[in-house]
Amino acid sequence: MEYIISVGTNLGDRKKNIDRCIDAINLLLYTDVTAQTSIYETEPVGYARQENFYNIILKVESIFEPHEMLGACLGIESGFGRVRAVRFGPRIIDIDVIFAENLKIESRNLIVPHPRYHERRFILEPLLELFPDGIVYGKDIRPYIESLEGQEIIKLDI
Image (cartoon, rainbow, N blue to C red; front, side, top):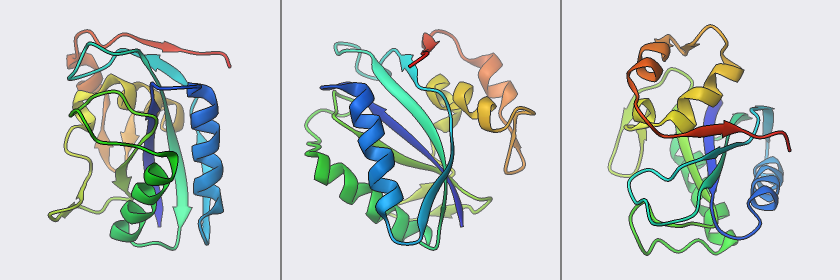
């Protein structure tokens, strides 16, 4: 199954956190990061009194079913020492399953497509690197990008 996964970090060595996260995903059994976007520096969304984030979007192939992939991502977050103290607050790593191919899932623990992906420039803009025509599993993301205001995003050359 193909996944689109968002990774963000704003604590510690942000570049190293992203690199280590990609390594951790690649260490999962029968799971490979097959494509990745550039790293973007972005303003925080939802809780402004914190450092800017580094964000990246990954395309991942895996034998895991969506709930298993979510569990693997939560396990990686836990391994990094992530603590969920403040909603949308600072975090050493944040891993979200954005898409699981064209599946629609609404369970207590998992909603895909991610319920707020269309409100997040740090997800939408990088997705254009992986899907230049703006069509992601049948969804045109360009109108979402055009409707967003703010949320400064800078593509980094690192």
